[in-house]
Image 1: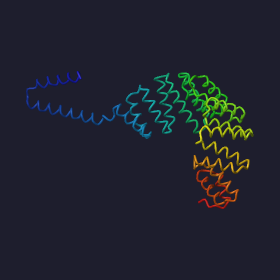
Image 2 (image 1 turned 90 degrees about the vertical axis):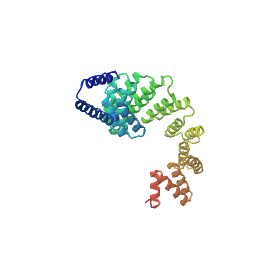
Image 3 (image 1 turned 45 degrees about the vertical axis):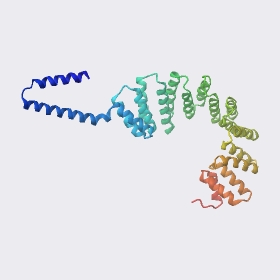
Image 4 (image 1 turned 30 degrees about the horizontal axis):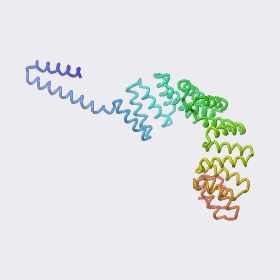
Length: 342
């Protein structure tokens, strides 16, 4: 403001020194033209201020218009090249568009400015992991693992970094290393121990070590008795090991914990179907379909039982529903029965 006042004082002083009226008029007109041009320029370019650009970018991001958001974050970054928050927002929008190379480049800019930013390392690891998944690229998974290790080093209590690290390692066929990081997470106070026991179980399952997997799924259930997925995972391992009765009891516990768990009823129905206990199959399928009428497997098993009992039309109706909801088995059965699926 002081500079503007000083400029105006100088202009006024020059104006006072002019005695020729015509010259005064000319000066006034010239100044008006200059100020008008400056005003027009200001109005035209107000939309390009950093604050306005960021507001537009944030609005587009919230509305899930990620390409537009990225464009405006890019413009804002051009106006403030030392602001890590803008680069982070820009990179996050680029991830949403699937432009992982550009996202990685901008997350690295964040880290150039702020080398200790754990969230930026995590986001960089996530971008590398997503890029790697597109082509099952081992070297990109290695890059993701390195970035996530930095994130954990900077923030040892970042639970999501351990989870993503394990996912990357498992995708990169490094189950032993995944178990190492999951086990390390179990030593950190406040983390979801049941969740990490469950994840360790997954690594053993992927190696077809069903006994070891069942042990860790059991630990997950012990750590969190309301963990429905862990009960179901444990039941699956018991089935793999041929212990159907204990599997049924385990699935039943999952259903007791949450009666809305259609998957638990379906898994019991599958065992009963294998054992030719059709009344029990229907009992489980009725419960499953009361929770989720669109469950393809429950519809399929119901249809197969009705057909076995000679109730063909009812069986076909359920198989049609199963096919509609995505059951390939139902499609095969319907074709074999001569049903036109067009």
